[in-house]
Image 1 (cartoon, rainbow, N blue to C red):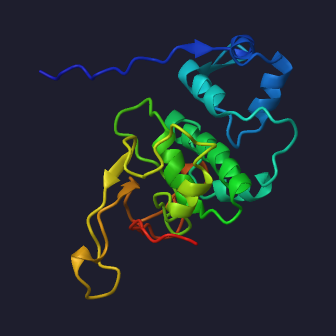
Image 2 (image 1 turned 180 degrees about the vertical axis):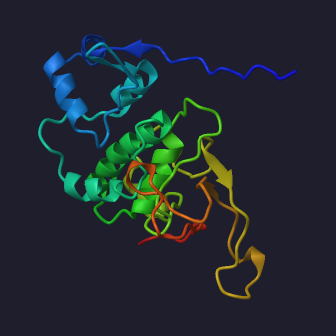
Image 3 (image 1 turned 60 degrees about the horizontal axis):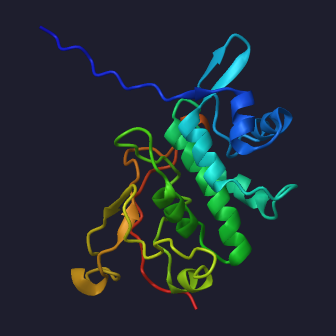
Length: 228
């Protein structure tokens, strides 16, 4: 006798009016934000003509959203980088990753324009609280090499990120990487074990809308060297 499949509980849903109340903005402003799909959570369904959204996703957006008016400095660069993080409107966690990366990356570039994008992605993944168990972030591993914040990042973010764990040893979606030799044929102990974000491993990387591209996926081992 076949067992009944385990049904995942549906998230609480909210419409535009409820989102406006949650974010303390007008309904028109919510519609404007929704049109900027670089980071606003996508609707999960429609009730008649009304889009409805996952309340936890909107709450996450509210936590990370910068209310600075106008187009943020550096948005063109970050939008280009987002094309290398899979966009999948059916995957709320993947869309949340894009949102958190957008906000994290803009902040990192404002603090230090030389911040490697791999460090920003690592931080975005650590900051996430996935709604589905076992979520694996999808991104172009030929473009991103996630790595923990180095000493320069930690020093420059000491004030603005006070209270956050910048060590790269936090929880979230991270997993322990095995010690690797920094030189071919070197000893395993020449690089300490670090924590790096998980990545979907397969024969292909993922591009826009979650479609596989022709690029090969590789798992980038997080380096621990410090910038000046």
